[in-house]
Length: 238
Image 1 (tube, rainbow, N blue to C red):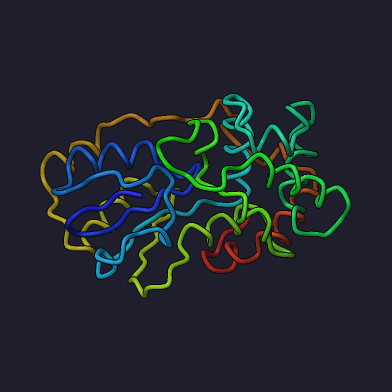
Image 2 (cartoon, rainbow, N blue to C red):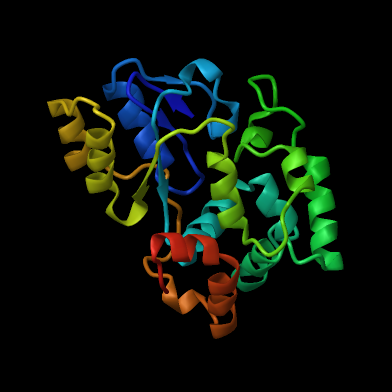
């Protein structure tokens, strides 16, 4: 979560956050990092008047990016759900999607996640446990019939305050970043324009260039069922 004079930026995992963090921290006045992958709920009240920006990604594409990035980094949520990296894409993503199905397997995985996740997140917590910004109580309250990505996305933007929230689409990242800056009254400087035009992608996952052939018909449909919230809200399809 980054605070600026013009907006709050919420960084949901695997939505170009490293690229956007650098852009905002280096080129937007008054920008400072409050908490990496911080949730809007944790924003101090004195900033509640500011609008919020963030990004969303096609869920089928998000799971591809998540799988290859988290596997490379041995991210702890991935390690638990993938049986320490033993399971393949199909089985791992199915487990992410079915976490709220109340099966014995999912209950066991959530119990492990509750034990592994930190109870608080601050600078004193091991960096490998600070990402992706999830606490044990949140896993303990994982909802039924939600895919992991829809749950994570909603969790990132929950707030007791009423903020104007503006969401850009990852698929048109550079144009959308400019649009969000304009909506929030952020001055569009030459440096911002040059960064959006010229800067290379950062923290890209070592993934295949396309995702269609990674999905069996069954897994494709499971994403459609479990990620219905994001698919309907942002009009995504396979």
